Image 1 (cartoon, rainbow, N blue to C red):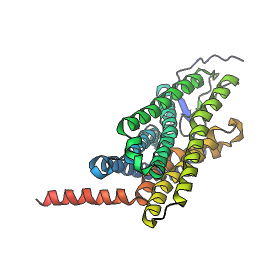
Image 2 (cartoon, helix red, strand yellow; image 1 turned 135 degrees about the horizontal axis):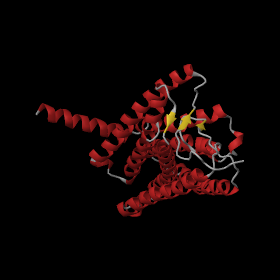
Image 3 (spheres, rainbow, N blue to C red; image 1 turned 60 degrees about the horizontal axis):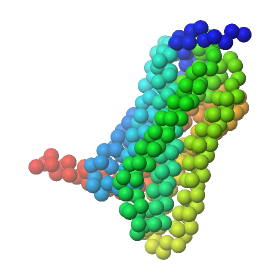
Image 4 (cartoon, helix red, strand yellow; image 1 turned 45 degrees about the horizontal axis):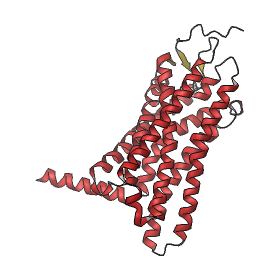
Length: 314
């Protein structure tokens, strides 16, 4: 077999559900609506967290970073997806596929680490309230976020370079909506044990280890919550921690199921719907979960709107 990528830089074809055009029409409408909600919701959280001085805390610093991540993640994927769903052709340039693959990995891995950082922040707030501002000082928060971003960048560089070096023997049809690792690995015409080992190793580092730290943090938080006598504080802890746990469950659940399973054990349509969920649904739900369950954000929005209204009148 000739394993030479003779057309290594040729355009890729993103198949999606091209054999079911009616399904694609429905999906395109849903994706467009979710993308608008993602843009509005995450932008609102970023603006409110920066404009309202009462939200200048570590929790909202991390939350605004999460919202920025979700904006970047969705924008690196959805516009090209909509172009392919609405247009007559399903192609994406080699360079466009590489960039989409790279940034999706980068932002996804960064979010894995950032969610673990946010769990530690909740642990410090609930279990060490008197020392919270000392423990979570601004310099530490910035370093933790920077570490998450650099960690995501490093993992993306490794996985992207290894995956794209695999010989494809002229295969160009990506059986998904986007250029992501599971679909690109299926294009390879040779089996690489090295790539599989590295994928699982990074999966442990960026998925299982952060998830374990999150679960440990919340186990300790649960013990602390059981000792809280103030009903108001107990409810506040449950609201903020409940929001974070919901996001963690949605994000980690689908990602681990998709990336930690053997690549051939996931059906084609199942993989496509999972891709739609964690690339479209999760970034949309994150701001809704945090705002609907969080009175601080709601009150901050009301204060900002009130100030704007008074300024307009004067």
